[in-house]
Length: 509
Ligand code: UN1
Figure 1 (cartoon, rainbow, N blue to C red):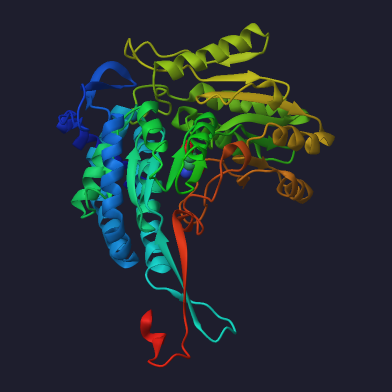
Figure 2: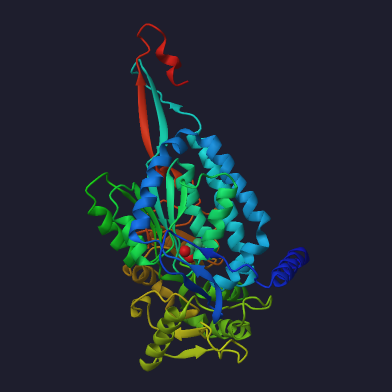
């Protein structure tokens, strides 16, 4: 790594150890029993306590959010942008505390934690800029009506954001920041596994000056989520997580007897990478390892199915296995670790069951051994590579460090794309090729949100690489893109008859 980056990382690490994880925070809703939050790399390590929001808490929060929303909306895009920018500054200033919690509560390696903080700050600043440019002043629309027609964006009301544990800071704060930028009040429900990072983020936003009732935290599991999404007073939900839960939320919103609520969903994927015989093996190896095993494969963008053209498959696979065998599996607090734990025991069991089922079905499996030094009660899964015939052999998304490999004949590219499309997800797809006709074929036919050519398929950059899928992978619009914030807004057109006496034109200018 760049020596400066390495030095900064080491300094952070030292800062974190000094504190010895001293602060064990408690997140409190209105009532109920505190529950311990444990660490994926050592489930006997209690990171802090959380008291879940009950349905009664949720109803109170919706009421408070509604009462606070009009003033927040009227404060204007520029004022909201200032607060979001200030929150970004505070996130950066609390860097070591955030990195420390990302590691301890979510099991992130240090380099993943650094990227996570970067992305969270980028989201805050990007949506602040959108608030400034889209929400500060009305737009005068052209046309021959003889009147002045002003278009202005407003918040819709109370938005509920429901976020995943795999980006406990970035995807917790990103959709919330977009909803806030647009003039909504927000009730943010973090994943049940990572409420403490969320609580820290909300505390810093309040410190930055965001009013308490404009951004509220509702910790809890699916019951808290259901209490919020079934409340007919909410204006919408921004959800990131499983396709199944997105469909359940959609049904819950459809049952509202009230304003028609919006759903913005970013869900799973069954992401493939296609490698033809013109690809550069070293580059493929690097990108396969990053795509499949970075973040222990726990990204919705991660590579799940590698398609190798059959005449290069053996050589390519040998090289990939060489890199796979060199991955350092271990405690995410160690700078050298490439692959940390998966999030919890449930995820661990599901992944181990999948690998066992594949073995039982006679598939060829390569699997690493876990190092003996891991804590006894740790949620690690030994990384695996499994040979399959086609993406259609897989029943579900396997959210962890498990890569599947299939082969295709030289004339089979169109069929591979058809198979990938037939699965119904549409998130990321990679292509390693130096053949223009293959670029054109894949770009023209693949139904995915993010296509990556000759690079790895994770780590979309806010603003430059807006991220999100279609079909079973989500509703769009893309997070970190120019159309995202507007989806949280309602449009109002005000027509002023300028022919009337008194010069009404100054009404809105
Ligand atoms: C997710 O895993 O939920 O491109 C999204 C990426 C990230 C987004 C992942 N920016 O890998």
